[in-house]
Structures are given as structure tokens and as C-alpha cells.
Image (cartoon, rainbow, N blue to C red):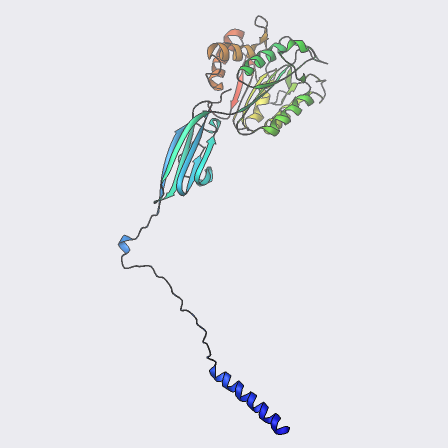
Length: 362
């Protein structure tokens, strides 16, 4: 039994050794690293500049925007400048990278549009543009208070508000009218002209405004100040205390929340003091009937405030035939008419204006 077991074990070992002899051991294959080197034998033919820069300039048209369409077979870089400068300062440019893109730029951003295109040399592209009527959101808050709740009444502030409303609605402004309790004196009526009501409505418009918005704030009524440049508007509920006292600082803080173009018109005593803060606003034209020490005047034969009559009726409607001139041009003509119509020569009683840029239109 023992011999048989030994022979069996030996046979198994021999069989394993024979199998091991037949195994071919494989070597690990490690490919050599191939480094591609540029052909430097012909350096004269190497291309140093592989892209092209092109510039274009387009002129804006009044009340129209520019729609630009670009299509290319490869991505290209497009910069467009709205700061009236042709210099290639990239921090002043808006940037897009496109192969097939259409974008629209509103007319109220600038007088001219500078476009720079940077493309690979082997790129083909098309560049087209067209002028379109601007899609704008136009809002106006119009305040006219003749019959005050606590202080003395005035004569033609409700007529001022009505005339501005009737005109601005022809320009497609959505007009919100705030006045005294004589609702029948207004073409339509959106509430009592308390400070709270008016400021709440300004906040609502601010929340929906954008760079295409045109906003007008027209106001006629009592005004006062401290003769040191600080003025305020007397709202319907003004009592002589802070209630109903819409100060220049409060008004400025409300206006700066509204995006887009702003036109502000004051026909109040001492309203020139409202303008100092408004100088800080962009895209804004504001005018007052007098300085911070002056008075507003009525013209009973026209049933209007003097500045409202000269600016709206004589300049806008009669001279420039409804919106054919910038607000700066309208002011200059209206100021001349104001002096001849009222005979006022006191410096304090002369109309004033601030304008953040040229060519602001209603």
C-alpha cells in the first residue's frame, strides 16, 4: 500500500513539471512614447496670426432699435460698445460668442453702436442688421392738486394734469393720475394724491421697469423749501408736518429705483431745489418752473400753470408738432416763451433743467 501511494504521488508531480515546461512566459509590452515635434525646417512659412479683427459702426435712429443677426461656420467673438467710443476697451464692451445668433439693442442706449468681430482666418460668416420700432414700456405718474385737504387751494393744477394726460396718452404712455377729491376734473382718476399713494405706485413701476422703459413724472401743486437748496412737494395730505411732505431726498431715492429713461416735470414753487439730487441719475431729463427760492405762476387766460403752458402747449404741441424735438430743444424754446409770456425777470423765477445726456425724447 505504501509503495502504491508513493508511485501515485510521484506520477502527479512529474505531470505538473511537464505542464510547467510547456507554459511560455509573456513579457509585458510597454510601448515607446512618441513625441511629435513641429517641423522647424521651414520657419519662413509658419503662420504667426491665425485670426482677424473687424470693426463696424452703426447709427441709431430715433425711436428704433437695431436687430443684428450673425451666422458663421465656426464660433466667433463679438463685442459691442454702447459708450460712444470706438476704442477697443474690452471692459466697456458687452461680449458674446456665437455661431448663429440674433440680438437687439434699444435706441436709448447710445447715439452710435460700435461692433468688433474677432474670428479665425478660415471662418466664413454673414452679418445683417435692420431697424425696428422699439418695443418700450411707457409709464407716467401725473399729479395735479388744486383743492388741498389742509392748506390753501390753487387754481389750475388739475387742468395741468389733464392736459399732460391727454397728450402723453397719444404717445402710448400708460398714465396714472392722482389728484384731489374732485374726480370729475380729470380725464381719468387713479387715486388721491397722498404721499403714500404716489410713492407706492412709483415702487410698483420700479419693480417692472427695465432698460427699455420710458417713465414720466409730471406734477403740479404747492411746493416749498428752506432756501438752502432743500425743497419738497406738498402732496394732497400735507399738514405742515412730515405727513404729505415729499422731500427732494425721498424723491431722488424713489427715482433711482426706476430703470430706463426718466422725464420729470415740476410746476411747483421752490421746485428748483428738487433738481440737485436728480443730477446723479442716468438717462434723465428734469425741469422745474423756478429755482429753490422762486415761485410758480398761473396763467388764468390759458387755465394752466405758466410753465406747463409754455412747455407743453407752446413748445411741444404748437412748435414741434408732437415729439419732433429733444427735451433740451423743447426747454430752450419754452424758456424763451416763458419770459415773453410772464415778463418775469427775477433770476429765482426762471425755469431750470438738468439733463444727463443729449437727445432724450418723450
